[in-house]
Picture 1: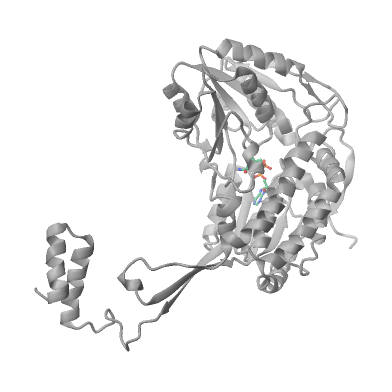
Picture 2: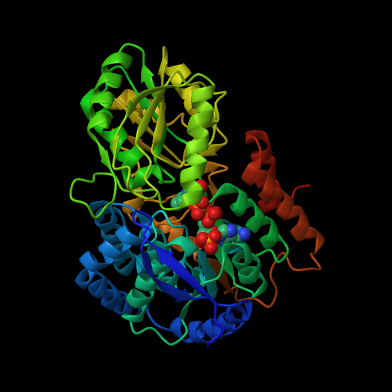
Length: 513
Ligand code: NAP
């Protein structure tokens, strides 16, 4: 088609064009949902093991092409090759294994024993029904790992998928298409569309998808939930984070400093669950800061294709600008740059890794998600103060506690308002597919990954068979007076004090009023 619009993909480090991807229309989305629904009806009839065979082919394909796909991710997103391989490719490969092996156990129909007299003479089962057409909209920061987990869960649960990749990482969208195509799925079970985000949400929901899995920013998540309310379409929202790291007096400081660099700066700090704020016990504040400074000043930021580069570039010019502005605002308000990394100035959208001190909770840099290679460090006197500061945010995706005293760390962890709290590490549990992922407060709604994620891809259906042999149940209308009296006795026995239980017993068995 000559008039078809295209999205051009660029390497954020060099500005080089990576290719042009045709754009779709709202009509494609409407027709797509109808086609997916036809294919899904057939797919849902397959056993878990048959579905698993298709996924296994996809996994083999991904492993075979893993290094070349990691290179494409690195070029499209700006992260280093190692980052792309470890956090996107490996995470997806491992996820295949979990969902292929465990979905049947989690989603198979099961008998449910009755708990009381109503269920005497009944046979009950609980089954999980695929929802139908799942809409998935994903961001550019982990452009392969995030959507792949959801695609795998949706497929294993028996659903079809309408998928949209972020506009900025359309080349990774192409990789996902190749992976899915390698599974020999029924035609049209998975349809990918390239439409701008601003029209995607309304179009997906108006086309009649059965559930939306959205990963992205809080404001867009709110808009989508509002739109979904019109049709009561369920949504799963995986949104932003402003994650705290608490370094206790008993922490292994070297490990904590290395961990801060990993979780705060990998992927140029563009991780929803990246460390954004560090709270350090005042007894170890200076030595910790010294270790952090030494490491940050040695880091080299630049073009991920260059050998010496340890941290790549920001993915989008919009995000680079937003981080710069937040950083400048904090400095104007009194923050000090305590450490700054080396940077190859010729690299397009790179930003140096930066540590700020003299920060406080009136500054945007501490209150809101920065989503870039900047961390603010504050000291605390008591654990209570550290917990209060960590929880002083509208967001609650993940958090971490660093201490050699695991008992104490667990005690602190249980008081933090976050969907995942890690002790002596941070961020990595997104790659453990059996651990649920999701946040407290405005970090999202629902959980993805693992058993909870699989359940979210289905509707619960209960089937109850009445096996009572008589022609009429005791509680069916009209209820005779003597049954009513005995029924009152039964209720007194179940829930009353000992005095009531005794009275209830006499009512039930002797009919005494
Ligand atoms: P974003 O602007 O919300 O975009 C995310 C995705 O939503 C993209 O595919 C985008 O498409 C699409 N989109 C934009 N506007 C939309 C609309 N009105 N309706 C439907 N879809 C729309 O987020 P971002 O800035 O790209 O990503 C960063 C945010 O995602 C951060 O807040 C980060 O913390 C969060 N995140 C959360 C998790 C998690 O697991 N909780 C994981 C990763 C990222 P276009 O690209 O075409 O605009």
